[in-house]
Amino acid sequence: MHPIAMLSSPTRPLAQLGRQHSRAAFRPSCRFAATRRCLAAATGRVHTLNTGAKIPAIGFGTFQDKDAQEAAVTTALQTGYRHIDTARVYDTEIPIGKAIKASGVARGEIFLTTKLWCNSHHPDDVEPALDASLRDLDTPYVDLYLMHYPCTFARGEEQFPKGDDGKIIMGETTYVDTWRAMEKLLKTGKAKAIGVSNFSKGEIETLLREGSVV
Image (cartoon, rainbow, N blue to C red; front, side, top):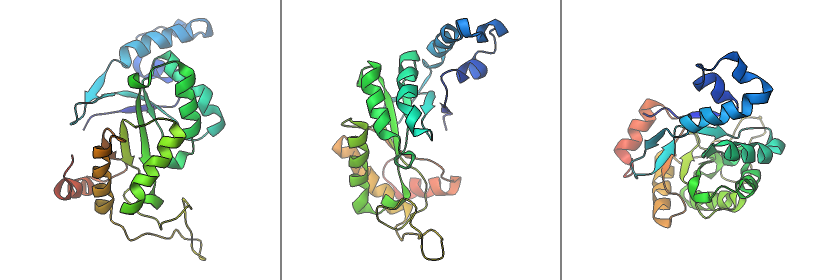
């Protein structure tokens, strides 16, 4: 398994990857230049997927703080990040789409990841959910489409459907059925690669046995 670092600030690589720099590198007057130098080295690191696609080892995460995402992602791309990670449930896909346009970085240079949420696990809902993400991201495809969690919620518009008792209403679809629907997306060109997140070792092993794409 390849380590992929998701960072939420364009200055964090200084702390994680630039320990050789002196404290002077963290002064405001030279922080941006130091960050760019650090990112230039770090973002060149890639891992090769089974599809042959190259995924940057350093990515920019976009969870929370929706109103700040457009400016943050624009700056991240202009600073040197080339892997942007989002998810349907983050509700940040629209500002990310705007940021990609505003950054001036060609779409083909960006590795864009988004994720399928638990209320869209039914096989009939998987492609429409991706279509909704593509509309908000204003792009014809994503480089990687992940199943966010293995658990399934009840179908519908509610991202966290709850019963009268306040508990989440679970769905009946298995993550294997969801995965098989995701496999079909590869033939559409809307997702260049598929994967999972927050899965246990045993759950991944089940997909390896039951699925046709690894």
